[in-house]
Image (cartoon, rainbow over all chains, first blue to last red; front, side, top):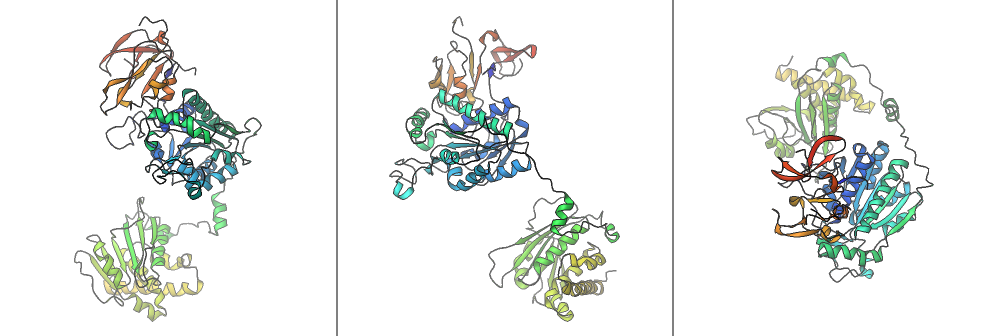
Length: 479
Length: 112
Protein backbone atom coordinates (compact mmCIF):
# COMPACT_ATOMS: atom_id res chain seq x y z
CA UNK A 1 0.00 0.00 0.00
CA UNK A 2 2.39 2.55 -1.20
CA UNK A 3 -0.14 4.81 -2.84
CA UNK A 4 -0.67 8.12 -1.14
CA UNK A 5 -4.30 8.45 -2.06
CA UNK A 6 -6.87 5.66 -1.90
CA UNK A 7 -9.62 6.72 -4.21
CA UNK A 8 -12.12 5.37 -6.67
CA UNK A 9 -10.15 3.34 -9.18
CA UNK A 10 -9.85 4.57 -12.74
CA UNK A 11 -10.95 1.13 -13.85
CA UNK A 12 -14.44 2.24 -12.82
CA UNK A 13 -16.34 4.67 -14.98
CA UNK A 14 -16.35 8.09 -13.41
CA UNK A 15 -20.08 8.34 -14.08
CA UNK A 16 -22.10 5.18 -14.67
CA UNK A 17 -23.69 6.37 -17.88
CA UNK A 18 -25.07 2.94 -18.71
CA UNK A 19 -27.07 2.84 -15.52
CA UNK A 20 -30.65 3.91 -16.10
CA UNK A 21 -32.29 6.49 -13.88
CA UNK A 22 -31.10 9.71 -12.35
CA UNK A 23 -28.52 8.32 -9.96
CA UNK A 24 -25.46 7.55 -12.00
CA UNK A 25 -22.88 7.78 -9.23
CA UNK A 26 -23.64 4.83 -7.01
CA UNK A 27 -23.86 1.12 -7.67
CA UNK A 28 -27.07 -0.87 -7.66
CA UNK A 29 -25.94 -2.87 -4.65
CA UNK A 30 -27.61 -2.73 -1.24
CA UNK A 31 -25.88 -0.99 1.67
CA UNK A 32 -23.29 -3.34 3.12
CA UNK A 33 -23.20 -5.68 0.12
CA UNK A 34 -19.97 -7.53 -0.51
CA UNK A 35 -20.07 -7.00 -4.29
CA UNK A 36 -18.93 -3.40 -4.02
CA UNK A 37 -15.91 -4.33 -1.91
CA UNK A 38 -14.92 -7.08 -4.32
CA UNK A 39 -15.44 -4.79 -7.33
CA UNK A 40 -13.15 -2.26 -5.70
CA UNK A 41 -10.43 -4.77 -5.06
CA UNK A 42 -10.57 -6.15 -8.60
CA UNK A 43 -10.54 -2.66 -10.08
CA UNK A 44 -7.60 -1.65 -7.93
CA UNK A 45 -5.65 -4.75 -8.96
CA UNK A 46 -6.38 -4.21 -12.67
CA UNK A 47 -5.22 -0.63 -12.36
CA UNK A 48 -2.07 -1.56 -10.45
CA UNK A 49 -1.15 -4.29 -12.91
CA UNK A 50 -1.81 -2.01 -15.86
CA UNK A 51 -4.09 -4.45 -17.66
CA UNK A 52 -7.31 -2.45 -17.81
CA UNK A 53 -7.14 -2.08 -21.57
CA UNK A 54 -6.93 -5.80 -22.22
CA UNK A 55 -9.33 -6.98 -19.55
CA UNK A 56 -12.66 -8.58 -20.39
CA UNK A 57 -14.99 -8.67 -17.43
CA UNK A 58 -17.81 -11.18 -17.58
CA UNK A 59 -20.98 -10.16 -15.80
CA UNK A 60 -23.04 -13.14 -14.73
CA UNK A 61 -26.69 -13.45 -13.87
CA UNK A 62 -27.25 -12.37 -10.29
CA UNK A 63 -26.97 -9.04 -8.49
CA UNK A 64 -23.76 -8.33 -10.38
CA UNK A 65 -25.50 -8.73 -13.73
CA UNK A 66 -24.92 -5.03 -14.31
CA UNK A 67 -21.21 -5.05 -13.51
CA UNK A 68 -20.72 -3.62 -16.99
CA UNK A 69 -22.27 -0.39 -15.75
CA UNK A 70 -19.22 0.10 -13.58
CA UNK A 71 -16.14 -1.51 -15.09
CA UNK A 72 -14.41 0.49 -17.77
CA UNK A 73 -13.02 -2.65 -19.38
CA UNK A 74 -14.25 -4.99 -22.04
CA UNK A 75 -17.55 -6.42 -20.87
CA UNK A 76 -19.72 -9.37 -21.75
CA UNK A 77 -22.94 -10.22 -19.97
CA UNK A 78 -23.63 -13.91 -20.26
CA UNK A 79 -26.45 -16.39 -19.76
CA UNK A 80 -26.99 -17.87 -16.32
CA UNK A 81 -24.05 -20.04 -15.28
CA UNK A 82 -22.32 -19.89 -18.66
CA UNK A 83 -19.56 -17.47 -17.75
CA UNK A 84 -16.80 -20.13 -17.78
CA UNK A 85 -17.88 -21.31 -21.23
CA UNK A 86 -17.87 -17.78 -22.62
CA UNK A 87 -14.61 -17.04 -20.82
CA UNK A 88 -13.06 -20.08 -22.47
CA UNK A 89 -13.96 -18.79 -25.90
CA UNK A 90 -12.84 -15.25 -25.15
CA UNK A 91 -9.53 -16.34 -23.73
CA UNK A 92 -8.75 -18.82 -26.46
CA UNK A 93 -9.59 -16.37 -29.21
CA UNK A 94 -7.74 -13.53 -27.50
CA UNK A 95 -4.94 -15.17 -25.55
CA UNK A 96 -3.44 -11.87 -24.48
CA UNK A 97 -6.62 -10.64 -22.88
CA UNK A 98 -7.22 -10.84 -19.14
CA UNK A 99 -10.55 -12.57 -18.65
CA UNK A 100 -12.41 -12.44 -15.35
CA UNK A 101 -15.39 -14.67 -14.78
CA UNK A 102 -17.31 -13.09 -11.94
CA UNK A 103 -20.01 -15.39 -10.61
CA UNK A 104 -22.30 -15.87 -7.67
CA UNK A 105 -23.11 -19.14 -5.94
CA UNK A 106 -26.43 -19.68 -7.65
CA UNK A 107 -24.75 -19.00 -10.98
CA UNK A 108 -21.57 -20.99 -10.43
CA UNK A 109 -22.57 -23.82 -8.12
CA UNK A 110 -26.11 -24.51 -9.33
CA UNK A 111 -27.02 -23.76 -12.91
CA UNK A 112 -23.43 -23.42 -14.07
CA UNK A 113 -22.00 -26.25 -11.99
CA UNK A 114 -20.69 -28.24 -14.92
CA UNK A 115 -19.34 -25.29 -16.88
CA UNK A 116 -17.03 -24.33 -14.07
CA UNK A 117 -15.91 -27.90 -13.40
CA UNK A 118 -14.91 -28.52 -16.97
CA UNK A 119 -13.33 -25.11 -17.48
CA UNK A 120 -11.30 -25.71 -14.32
CA UNK A 121 -10.46 -29.21 -15.42
CA UNK A 122 -9.15 -27.91 -18.73
CA UNK A 123 -7.12 -25.35 -16.82
CA UNK A 124 -8.36 -22.48 -18.99
CA UNK A 125 -6.26 -19.38 -18.48
CA UNK A 126 -8.82 -17.09 -16.85
CA UNK A 127 -9.63 -16.02 -13.33
CA UNK A 128 -12.83 -16.93 -11.55
CA UNK A 129 -14.11 -14.74 -8.75
CA UNK A 130 -16.77 -16.78 -6.99
CA UNK A 131 -18.94 -14.68 -4.69
CA UNK A 132 -20.59 -17.01 -2.21
CA UNK A 133 -23.37 -15.58 -0.06
CA UNK A 134 -25.21 -18.86 0.47
CA UNK A 135 -28.43 -17.77 -1.24
CA UNK A 136 -29.87 -16.50 -4.51
CA UNK A 137 -29.68 -12.82 -3.64
CA UNK A 138 -31.13 -11.06 -6.66
CA UNK A 139 -34.29 -13.12 -7.01
CA UNK A 140 -35.28 -12.64 -3.38
CA UNK A 141 -33.25 -15.02 -1.27
CA UNK A 142 -34.03 -18.57 -2.38
CA UNK A 143 -32.00 -21.60 -1.38
CA UNK A 144 -28.76 -22.05 -3.31
CA UNK A 145 -26.51 -25.12 -3.39
CA UNK A 146 -24.35 -23.33 -0.83
CA UNK A 147 -27.16 -22.60 1.64
CA UNK A 148 -26.25 -23.96 5.08
CA UNK A 149 -28.12 -26.81 6.75
CA UNK A 150 -30.96 -25.30 8.75
CA UNK A 151 -30.63 -21.92 7.07
CA UNK A 152 -33.98 -20.29 6.49
CA UNK A 153 -34.53 -18.96 3.01
CA UNK A 154 -37.54 -18.11 0.94
CA UNK A 155 -37.74 -21.65 -0.42
CA UNK A 156 -36.67 -23.39 2.81
CA UNK A 157 -38.89 -21.65 5.35
CA UNK A 158 -38.24 -24.36 7.93
CA UNK A 159 -34.55 -24.40 7.22
CA UNK A 160 -32.55 -26.42 4.69
CA UNK A 161 -33.13 -30.09 5.29
CA UNK A 162 -30.42 -32.37 3.86
CA UNK A 163 -32.95 -35.17 3.33
CA UNK A 164 -34.84 -33.03 0.85
CA UNK A 165 -32.26 -30.54 -0.30
CA UNK A 166 -28.87 -32.20 0.04
CA UNK A 167 -25.84 -30.59 1.58
CA UNK A 168 -24.09 -27.30 0.91
CA UNK A 169 -21.46 -27.72 -1.79
CA UNK A 170 -17.91 -26.65 -1.04
CA UNK A 171 -16.88 -25.53 -4.51
CA UNK A 172 -13.32 -24.54 -3.68
CA UNK A 173 -12.56 -27.98 -2.29
CA UNK A 174 -14.05 -29.63 -5.36
CA UNK A 175 -12.08 -27.42 -7.76
CA UNK A 176 -8.93 -28.01 -5.72
CA UNK A 177 -9.12 -31.76 -6.29
CA UNK A 178 -8.69 -31.24 -10.03
CA UNK A 179 -5.30 -31.42 -11.68
CA UNK A 180 -5.32 -28.32 -13.81
CA UNK A 181 -6.21 -25.39 -11.51
CA UNK A 182 -3.16 -23.44 -10.44
CA UNK A 183 -4.47 -21.51 -7.50
CA UNK A 184 -7.61 -22.01 -5.43
CA UNK A 185 -8.36 -20.06 -2.27
CA UNK A 186 -11.37 -19.25 -0.15
CA UNK A 187 -11.45 -15.91 1.62
CA UNK A 188 -14.14 -13.94 3.42
CA UNK A 189 -15.28 -10.36 3.86
CA UNK A 190 -15.75 -10.33 7.61
CA UNK A 191 -13.32 -7.89 9.16
CA UNK A 192 -10.59 -5.69 7.80
CA UNK A 193 -7.90 -8.31 8.28
CA UNK A 194 -9.84 -10.86 6.25
CA UNK A 195 -10.70 -8.24 3.66
CA UNK A 196 -7.02 -7.57 3.14
CA UNK A 197 -6.46 -11.32 2.73
CA UNK A 198 -9.20 -11.33 0.13
CA UNK A 199 -7.49 -8.45 -1.62
CA UNK A 200 -4.23 -10.38 -1.68
CA UNK A 201 -5.99 -13.47 -3.03
CA UNK A 202 -7.63 -11.55 -5.87
CA UNK A 203 -4.31 -9.99 -6.78
CA UNK A 204 -2.57 -13.32 -6.73
CA UNK A 205 -5.26 -14.96 -8.85
CA UNK A 206 -4.92 -12.21 -11.45
CA UNK A 207 -1.13 -12.54 -11.34
CA UNK A 208 -1.46 -16.25 -12.08
CA UNK A 209 -3.40 -15.34 -15.18
CA UNK A 210 -1.24 -12.41 -16.24
CA UNK A 211 2.09 -14.13 -15.73
CA UNK A 212 1.37 -17.79 -16.35
CA UNK A 213 -1.95 -17.92 -18.12
CA UNK A 214 -3.17 -20.37 -15.50
CA UNK A 215 -6.58 -21.07 -14.02
CA UNK A 216 -7.17 -19.40 -10.66
CA UNK A 217 -10.28 -19.59 -8.52
CA UNK A 218 -11.05 -17.33 -5.58
CA UNK A 219 -14.15 -18.02 -3.54
CA UNK A 220 -15.23 -15.07 -1.45
CA UNK A 221 -17.71 -15.49 1.42
CA UNK A 222 -19.61 -12.29 1.05
CA UNK A 223 -22.31 -10.69 3.19
CA UNK A 224 -25.85 -10.25 1.85
CA UNK A 225 -27.58 -8.10 4.48
CA UNK A 226 -30.81 -7.84 2.48
CA UNK A 227 -31.08 -11.53 1.70
CA UNK A 228 -30.12 -12.62 5.18
CA UNK A 229 -32.37 -9.97 6.75
CA UNK A 230 -29.58 -8.56 8.88
CA UNK A 231 -27.86 -5.24 9.33
CA UNK A 232 -24.58 -4.85 7.42
CA UNK A 233 -22.73 -5.23 10.68
CA UNK A 234 -24.59 -8.41 11.70
CA UNK A 235 -24.13 -9.85 8.22
CA UNK A 236 -20.41 -9.27 8.37
CA UNK A 237 -20.20 -11.10 11.70
CA UNK A 238 -22.40 -13.94 10.43
CA UNK A 239 -19.86 -14.54 7.67
CA UNK A 240 -17.13 -15.06 10.24
CA UNK A 241 -19.14 -16.81 12.95
CA UNK A 242 -21.38 -19.12 10.94
CA UNK A 243 -20.65 -19.24 7.22
CA UNK A 244 -16.90 -19.72 7.53
CA UNK A 245 -17.42 -22.62 9.95
CA UNK A 246 -18.85 -24.71 7.15
CA UNK A 247 -16.76 -23.09 4.43
CA UNK A 248 -13.31 -22.86 5.98
CA UNK A 249 -11.17 -20.10 4.53
CA UNK A 250 -7.65 -20.66 3.33
CA UNK A 251 -5.60 -21.74 0.35
CA UNK A 252 -7.00 -24.97 -1.05
CA UNK A 253 -4.47 -25.44 -3.78
CA UNK A 254 -1.46 -23.48 -4.93
CA UNK A 255 0.97 -24.77 -7.50
CA UNK A 256 1.75 -21.33 -8.87
CA UNK A 257 5.44 -21.58 -7.94
CA UNK A 258 6.11 -24.72 -9.92
CA UNK A 259 3.52 -24.15 -12.64
CA UNK A 260 5.35 -23.45 -15.85
CA UNK A 261 2.62 -21.60 -17.60
CA UNK A 262 0.01 -22.51 -20.11
CA UNK A 263 0.74 -22.04 -23.78
CA UNK A 264 -1.00 -19.18 -25.46
CA UNK A 265 -0.69 -20.29 -29.05
CA UNK A 266 -3.72 -19.92 -31.18
CA UNK A 267 -3.90 -21.96 -34.31
CA UNK A 268 -4.78 -19.51 -37.01
CA UNK A 269 -6.86 -21.02 -39.76
CA UNK A 270 -6.68 -19.19 -43.04
CA UNK A 271 -9.70 -18.27 -45.09
CA UNK A 272 -8.53 -20.64 -47.80
CA UNK A 273 -8.33 -23.55 -45.37
CA UNK A 274 -11.83 -22.91 -44.08
CA UNK A 275 -13.13 -22.76 -47.65
CA UNK A 276 -11.36 -26.02 -48.40
CA UNK A 277 -12.79 -27.77 -45.33
CA UNK A 278 -16.28 -26.58 -46.14
CA UNK A 279 -15.90 -27.52 -49.79
CA UNK A 280 -16.48 -23.99 -50.99
CA UNK A 281 -14.83 -23.10 -54.25
CA UNK A 282 -13.11 -19.86 -53.47
CA UNK A 283 -14.74 -17.21 -55.30
CA UNK A 284 -14.41 -16.91 -58.57
CA UNK A 285 -14.13 -13.74 -60.39
CA UNK A 286 -17.11 -11.48 -60.21
CA UNK A 287 -19.45 -12.23 -63.04
CA UNK A 288 -19.82 -9.35 -65.48
CA UNK A 289 -23.58 -9.69 -65.50
CA UNK A 290 -23.58 -8.74 -61.83
CA UNK A 291 -21.81 -5.43 -62.39
CA UNK A 292 -24.97 -3.67 -63.47
CA UNK A 293 -26.39 -4.12 -59.97
CA UNK A 294 -23.37 -3.09 -57.93
CA UNK A 295 -24.55 0.45 -57.31
CA UNK A 296 -28.25 -0.32 -57.23
CA UNK A 297 -29.93 1.08 -54.16
CA UNK A 298 -31.98 -1.77 -52.79
CA UNK A 299 -33.70 -2.18 -49.46
CA UNK A 300 -36.14 -5.05 -49.65
CA UNK A 301 -37.67 -6.71 -46.62
CA UNK A 302 -39.26 -9.88 -47.85
CA UNK A 303 -41.52 -12.35 -46.15
CA UNK A 304 -42.07 -15.67 -47.87
CA UNK A 305 -44.88 -17.79 -46.52
CA UNK A 306 -46.71 -20.92 -47.47
CA UNK A 307 -47.24 -24.57 -46.59
CA UNK A 308 -44.32 -26.63 -45.48
CA UNK A 309 -43.09 -28.47 -48.59
CA UNK A 310 -43.81 -25.66 -51.01
CA UNK A 311 -40.18 -24.69 -50.96
CA UNK A 312 -40.81 -21.54 -49.01
CA UNK A 313 -37.49 -21.68 -47.18
CA UNK A 314 -35.48 -22.48 -50.29
CA UNK A 315 -37.23 -19.66 -52.14
CA UNK A 316 -35.97 -17.33 -49.44
CA UNK A 317 -32.51 -18.78 -49.37
CA UNK A 318 -32.23 -18.55 -53.14
CA UNK A 319 -33.06 -14.85 -53.06
CA UNK A 320 -30.65 -14.23 -50.21
CA UNK A 321 -27.81 -16.23 -51.72
CA UNK A 322 -28.18 -14.69 -55.14
CA UNK A 323 -28.45 -11.26 -53.53
CA UNK A 324 -25.17 -11.92 -51.81
CA UNK A 325 -23.61 -12.82 -55.15
CA UNK A 326 -24.77 -9.48 -56.48
CA UNK A 327 -22.95 -7.64 -53.74
CA UNK A 328 -25.94 -6.86 -51.55
CA UNK A 329 -26.06 -7.32 -47.79
CA UNK A 330 -28.49 -10.12 -47.09
CA UNK A 331 -30.05 -12.07 -44.26
CA UNK A 332 -32.26 -15.12 -44.18
CA UNK A 333 -34.19 -16.17 -41.12
CA UNK A 334 -36.43 -19.20 -41.13
CA UNK A 335 -39.30 -18.88 -38.71
CA UNK A 336 -40.07 -22.00 -36.76
CA UNK A 337 -43.22 -21.18 -34.90
CA UNK A 338 -45.41 -23.76 -33.20
CA UNK A 339 -47.04 -24.31 -36.58
CA UNK A 340 -49.68 -26.93 -36.95
CA UNK A 341 -49.80 -29.01 -40.07
CA UNK A 342 -51.63 -26.97 -42.64
CA UNK A 343 -50.52 -23.78 -41.03
CA UNK A 344 -48.00 -21.41 -42.44
CA UNK A 345 -44.25 -21.83 -42.63
CA UNK A 346 -42.33 -18.70 -43.40
CA UNK A 347 -38.95 -17.09 -43.69
CA UNK A 348 -37.66 -13.58 -43.47
CA UNK A 349 -35.26 -12.27 -46.10
CA UNK A 350 -33.54 -8.93 -46.22
CA UNK A 351 -31.67 -7.71 -49.26
CA UNK A 352 -30.11 -4.34 -48.84
CA UNK A 353 -27.38 -2.05 -50.05
CA UNK A 354 -26.62 -0.92 -46.51
CA UNK A 355 -25.91 -2.94 -43.40
CA UNK A 356 -28.66 -5.05 -41.88
CA UNK A 357 -29.32 -4.62 -38.18
CA UNK A 358 -31.89 -7.29 -37.44
CA UNK A 359 -32.84 -10.18 -39.69
CA UNK A 360 -36.44 -10.05 -38.50
CA UNK A 361 -39.01 -8.80 -40.99
CA UNK A 362 -42.12 -7.60 -39.21
CA UNK A 363 -43.46 -5.30 -41.92
CA UNK A 364 -42.43 -6.64 -45.31
CA UNK A 365 -42.02 -4.50 -48.40
CA UNK A 366 -42.64 -7.65 -50.37
CA UNK A 367 -44.88 -10.48 -49.28
CA UNK A 368 -44.79 -13.74 -51.18
CA UNK A 369 -47.88 -15.69 -50.21
CA UNK A 370 -47.92 -19.24 -51.49
CA UNK A 371 -51.20 -20.24 -49.85
CA UNK A 372 -54.38 -18.76 -48.49
CA UNK A 373 -53.54 -18.88 -44.77
CA UNK A 374 -50.33 -16.96 -45.46
CA UNK A 375 -52.15 -14.25 -47.33
CA UNK A 376 -54.75 -14.03 -44.58
CA UNK A 377 -52.15 -13.82 -41.90
CA UNK A 378 -49.62 -11.42 -43.39
CA UNK A 379 -51.59 -9.25 -45.80
CA UNK A 380 -52.10 -6.51 -43.27
CA UNK A 381 -48.43 -6.42 -42.27
CA UNK A 382 -47.23 -5.28 -45.68
CA UNK A 383 -46.08 -1.67 -45.69
CA UNK A 384 -48.11 0.82 -47.63
CA UNK A 385 -46.71 0.97 -51.16
CA UNK A 386 -45.34 -2.53 -50.83
CA UNK A 387 -45.89 -5.52 -53.06
CA UNK A 388 -47.94 -8.65 -52.53
CA UNK A 389 -47.07 -11.57 -54.79
CA UNK A 390 -49.48 -14.45 -54.46
CA UNK A 391 -50.07 -17.76 -56.12
CA UNK A 392 -53.50 -17.34 -57.69
CA UNK A 393 -53.63 -20.97 -58.74
CA UNK A 394 -54.00 -21.90 -55.05
CA UNK A 395 -55.41 -18.80 -53.42
CA UNK A 396 -59.07 -18.28 -54.12
CA UNK A 397 -59.30 -14.66 -53.11
CA UNK A 398 -57.66 -11.44 -54.07
CA UNK A 399 -55.85 -9.28 -51.56
CA UNK A 400 -58.14 -6.55 -50.24
CA UNK A 401 -55.47 -3.95 -49.72
CA UNK A 402 -55.63 -1.09 -52.17
CA UNK A 403 -52.44 0.72 -51.15
CA UNK A 404 -50.11 -2.02 -52.35
CA UNK A 405 -49.15 -3.46 -55.71
CA UNK A 406 -50.72 -6.86 -56.16
CA UNK A 407 -49.10 -9.39 -58.47
CA UNK A 408 -50.92 -12.66 -59.00
CA UNK A 409 -48.80 -15.47 -60.44
CA UNK A 410 -50.21 -18.94 -61.16
CA UNK A 411 -46.94 -20.41 -59.94
CA UNK A 412 -48.15 -23.85 -58.99
CA UNK A 413 -49.99 -24.20 -62.29
CA UNK A 414 -46.93 -23.18 -64.30
CA UNK A 415 -44.76 -25.53 -62.26
CA UNK A 416 -47.17 -28.37 -62.79
CA UNK A 417 -46.97 -27.82 -66.54
CA UNK A 418 -43.20 -28.12 -66.37
CA UNK A 419 -43.45 -31.34 -64.44
CA UNK A 420 -43.52 -30.82 -60.70
CA UNK A 421 -45.50 -28.57 -58.37
CA UNK A 422 -42.48 -28.51 -56.11
CA UNK A 423 -40.73 -25.97 -58.29
CA UNK A 424 -43.44 -23.34 -57.97
CA UNK A 425 -41.04 -21.49 -55.72
CA UNK A 426 -38.55 -21.02 -58.56
CA UNK A 427 -41.26 -19.67 -60.83
CA UNK A 428 -41.77 -16.98 -58.22
CA UNK A 429 -38.03 -16.33 -57.97
CA UNK A 430 -37.89 -15.72 -61.71
CA UNK A 431 -40.96 -13.55 -61.64
CA UNK A 432 -39.99 -11.20 -58.84
CA UNK A 433 -36.37 -10.87 -59.88
CA UNK A 434 -37.61 -9.85 -63.29
CA UNK A 435 -40.26 -7.53 -61.92
CA UNK A 436 -38.02 -5.74 -59.43
CA UNK A 437 -34.96 -5.88 -61.69
CA UNK A 438 -33.13 -6.88 -58.57
CA UNK A 439 -30.56 -9.20 -60.05
CA UNK A 440 -29.34 -10.66 -63.30
CA UNK A 441 -31.77 -13.37 -64.37
CA UNK A 442 -29.15 -14.98 -66.60
CA UNK A 443 -26.71 -15.16 -63.75
CA UNK A 444 -29.24 -16.81 -61.46
CA UNK A 445 -30.18 -19.36 -64.08
CA UNK A 446 -26.54 -20.23 -64.63
CA UNK A 447 -25.63 -20.55 -60.99
CA UNK A 448 -28.79 -22.01 -59.49
CA UNK A 449 -26.94 -25.27 -58.85
CA UNK A 450 -24.96 -23.47 -56.15
CA UNK A 451 -28.16 -23.27 -54.12
CA UNK A 452 -30.01 -26.33 -55.32
CA UNK A 453 -27.45 -29.06 -54.92
CA UNK A 454 -29.36 -31.79 -56.71
CA UNK A 455 -28.19 -31.99 -60.34
CA UNK A 456 -31.40 -33.70 -61.36
CA UNK A 457 -33.53 -30.81 -60.21
CA UNK A 458 -31.24 -28.08 -61.46
CA UNK A 459 -32.49 -28.20 -65.01
CA UNK A 460 -36.09 -28.19 -63.90
CA UNK A 461 -35.40 -25.23 -61.64
CA UNK A 462 -33.79 -23.35 -64.53
CA UNK A 463 -36.83 -24.00 -66.61
CA UNK A 464 -39.07 -22.81 -63.80
CA UNK A 465 -37.15 -19.57 -63.42
CA UNK A 466 -37.34 -18.99 -67.17
CA UNK A 467 -41.09 -19.56 -67.11
CA UNK A 468 -41.47 -17.12 -64.25
CA UNK A 469 -39.55 -14.49 -66.16
CA UNK A 470 -41.53 -15.22 -69.29
CA UNK A 471 -44.82 -14.89 -67.42
CA UNK A 472 -43.86 -11.48 -66.14
CA UNK A 473 -42.53 -10.34 -69.51
CA UNK A 474 -45.76 -11.19 -71.28
CA UNK A 475 -48.21 -10.09 -68.61
CA UNK A 476 -46.50 -6.95 -67.36
CA UNK A 477 -44.85 -5.84 -70.58
CA UNK A 478 -41.38 -5.85 -69.09
CA UNK A 479 -38.49 -5.56 -71.49
CA UNK B 1 -6.03 20.28 13.73
CA UNK B 2 -3.30 20.28 16.26
CA UNK B 3 -3.59 16.58 17.04
CA UNK B 4 -0.17 15.00 16.68
CA UNK B 5 -1.68 11.63 15.88
CA UNK B 6 -3.27 12.93 12.71
CA UNK B 7 -1.31 11.43 9.84
CA UNK B 8 -3.93 11.05 7.19
CA UNK B 9 -7.19 12.50 6.01
CA UNK B 10 -10.44 10.92 4.95
CA UNK B 11 -13.16 12.43 2.80
CA UNK B 12 -16.62 10.90 2.55
CA UNK B 13 -18.57 11.60 -0.59
CA UNK B 14 -21.88 12.17 1.12
CA UNK B 15 -24.15 11.50 -1.84
CA UNK B 16 -22.46 8.21 -2.68
CA UNK B 17 -22.58 6.91 0.90
CA UNK B 18 -25.32 4.36 1.59
CA UNK B 19 -24.99 4.56 5.35
CA UNK B 20 -24.14 0.90 5.90
CA UNK B 21 -21.80 1.85 8.72
CA UNK B 22 -19.11 -0.66 7.84
CA UNK B 23 -16.41 2.02 7.72
CA UNK B 24 -17.46 3.40 11.08
CA UNK B 25 -17.20 -0.07 12.57
CA UNK B 26 -13.92 -0.85 10.84
CA UNK B 27 -12.04 2.33 11.71
CA UNK B 28 -9.38 1.33 14.26
CA UNK B 29 -9.10 4.81 15.73
CA UNK B 30 -12.80 5.65 15.73
CA UNK B 31 -12.63 8.86 13.83
CA UNK B 32 -15.67 8.14 11.65
CA UNK B 33 -19.29 8.43 12.72
CA UNK B 34 -22.70 8.25 11.12
CA UNK B 35 -24.32 11.61 10.69
CA UNK B 36 -27.66 12.43 12.22
CA UNK B 37 -28.51 14.02 8.91
CA UNK B 38 -29.71 12.29 5.78
CA UNK B 39 -28.25 12.57 2.34
CA UNK B 40 -30.68 13.10 -0.55
CA UNK B 41 -31.37 9.38 -0.76
CA UNK B 42 -32.27 9.08 2.90
CA UNK B 43 -29.13 7.49 4.30
CA UNK B 44 -27.32 8.52 7.47
CA UNK B 45 -24.03 9.11 5.75
CA UNK B 46 -20.63 8.56 7.34
CA UNK B 47 -18.54 11.53 8.40
CA UNK B 48 -15.01 12.22 9.54
CA UNK B 49 -14.57 13.76 12.97
CA UNK B 50 -11.95 16.10 11.57
CA UNK B 51 -8.74 14.82 13.08
CA UNK B 52 -7.07 11.66 14.27
CA UNK B 53 -7.04 9.79 10.92
CA UNK B 54 -3.95 7.63 10.60
CA UNK B 55 -4.38 7.09 6.88
CA UNK B 56 -4.46 3.31 7.26
CA UNK B 57 -7.04 2.89 4.52
CA UNK B 58 -9.10 0.27 6.33
CA UNK B 59 -12.31 2.27 5.88
CA UNK B 60 -11.59 2.46 2.14
CA UNK B 61 -11.40 -1.30 1.80
CA UNK B 62 -14.43 -1.88 4.06
CA UNK B 63 -16.61 0.43 2.04
CA UNK B 64 -18.71 -1.29 -0.64
CA UNK B 65 -19.21 1.84 -2.70
CA UNK B 66 -16.44 2.54 -5.21
CA UNK B 67 -16.45 6.29 -4.85
CA UNK B 68 -17.79 6.96 -1.37
CA UNK B 69 -14.53 7.16 0.57
CA UNK B 70 -11.21 8.73 -0.35
CA UNK B 71 -8.25 8.33 1.98
CA UNK B 72 -5.21 10.59 1.90
CA UNK B 73 -2.30 8.96 3.62
CA UNK B 74 -0.11 12.02 3.86
CA UNK B 75 -1.74 14.67 6.01
CA UNK B 76 1.48 16.65 5.88
CA UNK B 77 0.86 17.22 2.16
CA UNK B 78 -2.60 18.56 2.79
CA UNK B 79 -1.51 21.90 4.04
CA UNK B 80 -4.23 24.38 3.48
CA UNK B 81 -7.78 25.13 2.49
CA UNK B 82 -8.55 26.80 -0.78
CA UNK B 83 -11.67 27.72 -2.64
CA UNK B 84 -12.85 24.94 -4.96
CA UNK B 85 -15.01 26.14 -7.83
CA UNK B 86 -16.35 22.71 -8.43
CA UNK B 87 -17.52 22.17 -4.84
CA UNK B 88 -18.35 25.86 -4.39
CA UNK B 89 -16.64 26.13 -1.03
CA UNK B 90 -13.44 26.07 0.98
CA UNK B 91 -11.83 22.64 0.84
CA UNK B 92 -8.54 21.10 1.87
CA UNK B 93 -6.24 20.75 -1.10
CA UNK B 94 -3.41 18.40 -1.90
CA UNK B 95 -0.49 18.40 -4.29
CA UNK B 96 0.83 15.74 -6.60
CA UNK B 97 4.50 15.10 -7.25
CA UNK B 98 4.07 14.69 -10.97
CA UNK B 99 2.07 17.91 -11.25
CA UNK B 100 4.06 20.51 -9.36
CA UNK B 101 2.50 23.86 -8.59
CA UNK B 102 -1.04 22.57 -8.89
CA UNK B 103 -3.56 22.05 -6.12
CA UNK B 104 -6.34 19.52 -6.10
CA UNK B 105 -9.47 19.49 -4.00
CA UNK B 106 -9.69 16.63 -1.50
CA UNK B 107 -13.43 16.40 -1.98
CA UNK B 108 -13.82 16.28 -5.74
CA UNK B 109 -10.18 15.45 -6.64
CA UNK B 110 -10.27 18.14 -9.34
CA UNK B 111 -7.85 20.99 -9.74
CA UNK B 112 -8.82 24.13 -7.85
